[in-house]
Length: 224
Image (cartoon, rainbow, N blue to C red; front, side):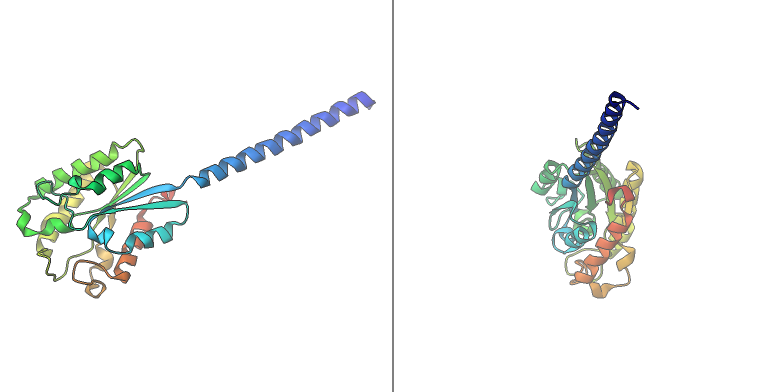
């Protein structure tokens, strides 16, 4: 092999090595960029979202690649004829501005108030309306509906019978109507009234069970 051929071969090898190195650097940079962009998770709900540590427990399970937005509002209802309708709250607007990648909605507990005189048809219609708004966000979030934990004896005028007969079936119907996934936070707590402060709001143990149920039900693609 003469000098010219050797030089050409050396140059080609160098170009191959350099190209490979450049590609590796670009892939690494791209991976780092992807890791640098956190997944925005909007937790929508009432005081069971806002008033417990469930969102913090969920964040601990998801890890540092996620940002949790707690958009819970105490007393919030699905029912739009209530003054406490979630859609009338500032948190609702903030949750949309958050442009979430994932939305976790746990509402319905306060709709078990007999004073609302709410029918299941109204409940389902209002819930579907709320869900459709989140589905239309530019961020195209993955939406999960959560069946709230059970209602035990309480002084908040919340009926466990109404919850079982109207709210729970209504949530399932809204889920079926929209084709969205349903997470069961009811069953893990149904035998644990001792995990509640007042028959409605979970203690630390209850909040942890909710977070675990939500995390376990998330699509693998939504967990990095």
